[in-house]
Image 1 (tube, rainbow, N blue to C red):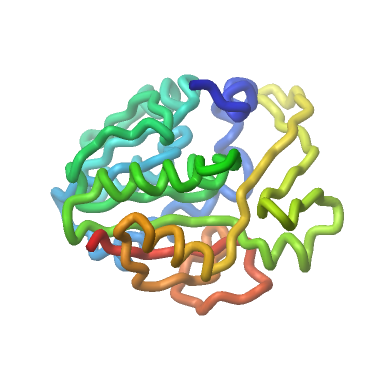
Image 2: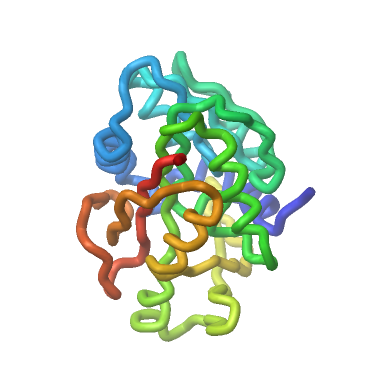
Length: 234
């Protein structure tokens, strides 16, 4: 099953890692390790891993990580310099078949979950994330904030009925060549996240307002772009 994001990833390639929102990896992983209670030797599934920045950082801390992404180009980049303990494969998050194999699952920075905007796709992804966790396993899931889009973005096409934001932009490759792009992003409130995760056997431990490179346990506000949900498979 294809996805509209694949040609954008093909065009960006390594240039994806030049975007400012990718520069806070170490801080984000610091927080995720603490929030999930990760320990050396545990197994983590990174869903929508992109070129592997979070997976690399986790593996360098002795955590065993398997990253999946729908973009073959991103998977190739991730594999090229993968540290010991990090593996990658092309896989559609709507078709996860892992069964209680991981101590933790992460899905960050609009990876997979945030880009699945057709009816029921986000629920399908969450069901797969939940199945991949062992009982008692932990999930870290980020999602874009509906509040933030409505309050702060003037040049946007936000559908109040579906909660999907449609943005016209451009992406650049490593040589600076621009390609016009349309992005569709699912947006959520904390209540919606709690309900969705709860429907799939995931008890929500916390939902925080976060920004790239500034993950914390800050209570939800209307002025931060993303929410970070921490949950446990019950």
